[in-house]
Image 1 (cartoon, rainbow, N blue to C red):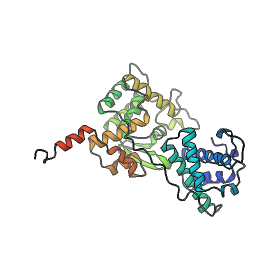
Image 2 (image 1 turned 90 degrees about the vertical axis):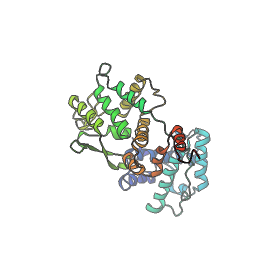
Image 3 (image 1 turned 30 degrees about the vertical axis):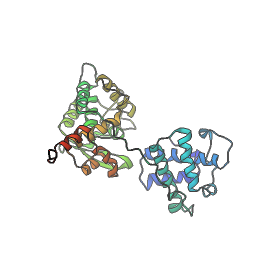
Image 4 (image 1 turned 60 degrees about the vertical axis):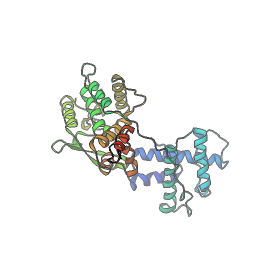
Length: 326
């Protein structure tokens, strides 16, 4: 929960605008709040407005808009450097914070009219390392599914098998999976809707493996509790018959990875999303735009990380060139 009493009024107004006008998800609002709070705490220390040197112990509800007006692009750069040197923040983390700061100052200048000059207008994103996504091989994926389907070792085998089947076949996010309701699934059309980042709804088509796993799970699914979280509507339920939580799903995936002899420290829930995307691209020859739609990526550049291929495939492609024997 966000403690709005600890925020200056203009920050709370920004959060309200992001939620109601920009239609940002609760998770995005929390990230905005966390990022801007961190930035303002640094500004208070940077401008010598406090003697406290520990960021966590600095309060910001007394930072006036007059102080905000004094912030320059150099101060923002100083904050990002501070995050790098003090907290060893990765480029991706700094890029997210830079994005939050840009949106915050854009609101203060263009929407709220509290600033005349936007100090973040020319703020660039830190250059990101283009790392290849980690994923399971086809054989590893098959092994994981086989182990998860073993009902002798797990009374929730059908539920857990359905969860991992959806991850490996549909490439959905953890946040999307836990929020699925039974009513979101159109069995006659073999598809379902999920709510992705930014509260954007998209359609995911279900193949035979997904349909079979879901139907077998729903045959033994218990009744959900009628509570405020609408557990009775949720697709996946916990042992307490409430909507399954993220941590529970993470535990399920870790447990089954270990049972399959795979390193759970190197393969998280998100790696299963990478696996689905990679396998579809490598074996299904899926068009990159179709893959973008399936994964719910806003930018095609995000999807392009899956266009990597194994070195053996590159070598085979070169060897298969009709000019190779010339």
